[in-house]
Amino acid sequence: MSVKKYKVKLSFQQRQRLKALSKRGKVKAQQLNRARVLLLADENRPKGPMTDLQINQTLYLSLSTIARIRQRFVTDGLDAAICDKPRPGRPIKFSGSQRAKVTALACTTPQEGHGHWSMRLMADKLVELGFVESISHTSVANILKKTNFRLI
Image 1 (cartoon, rainbow, N blue to C red):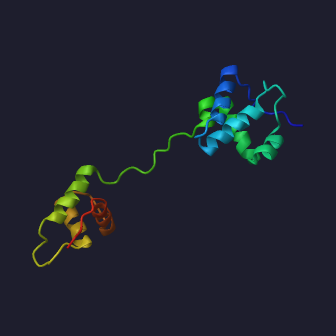
Image 2: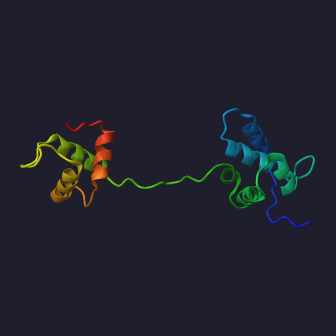
Image 3: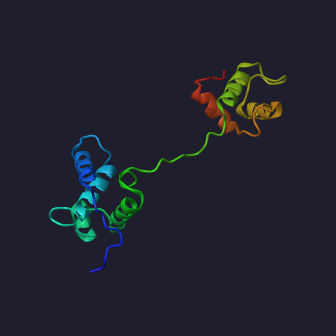
């Protein structure tokens, strides 16, 4: 049998917190599974710690997931093992003032020689006026769509 590199040793308070978390009704399934893994892998468990294979057969989680939860608990602590790290997502490409300028331009009369604003014409005009560095006709349409603006 191989020696475990990351041994989970929960304090009494940590164990109580995980038990309360697993009994609460509205918890994400991921958090519930992570709490259960830590409770079953605990060295201080009355029945002794379960092996990764036993946890795998009990909770139907992959061995790599179980090992990753153990590692995160030992290296980063209980909160990091249970909760996901925040994910920043893609930054907003156009600020609120730029979006307002798109809407304001759509409310004006179109250039001479045109009966109405097309998305491509608006995109070109926004770049020409220096409101944005670059913008596609699709982005103009999406901005106007979010403001419930209807071109006639």
